[in-house]
Length: 107
Length: 116
Image 1 (cartoon, one colour):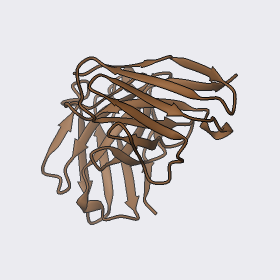
Image 2 (cartoon, each protein chain N blue to C red):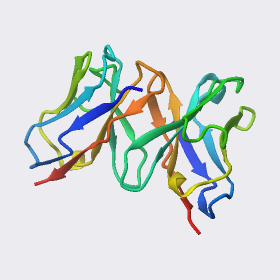
Image 3 (cartoon, chains in turn cyan, purple):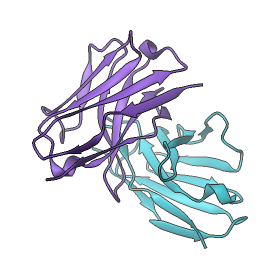
Image 4 (cartoon, rainbow over the protein chains, first blue to last red):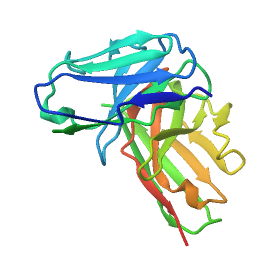
């Protein structure tokens, strides 16, 4: 199965700063990489699908890029509500797999 | 508005059984593949099982194969996960999720605790 490695494990930033989260796949997944935001006690929220497509209702400050094995989620200017856990997921090969997550915390 | 609401979790002893339900509304349930995903305490998300729209095809993670059974009742717009021979390591929050090639809607999750 494909292993997704997210880095860093924890990212400490201030509101207004730019966040760059990385997801690396153990083998190529083409552009079939998805990003979710997850807050404690809530349902995970779809942010980006197929590497760079923003889901419905997702603000433009969220953007995704990459293909093959290296992917990036960028939040251009952090809002207070953006501090959460972020997971990547690949849907290229079965079984689908998730990264271990990046915790974005307020500095 | 799409809604997925899980129920049926709780505390069970090792070796016991539980059935989770996921009530769907706001969309044509019978058109979609549905999945269960879980998150153990302090861990990441892990895919558990999936079922096709008419319930004729299912898949499972190796860790639950032979112990868990996914099913659905399209007349009741409800997804199920029957969990048997539960182990301590099955302790997790279980989420149902709608498949649009990616998981575009998730339930809020329901905690299953397996402990003596």
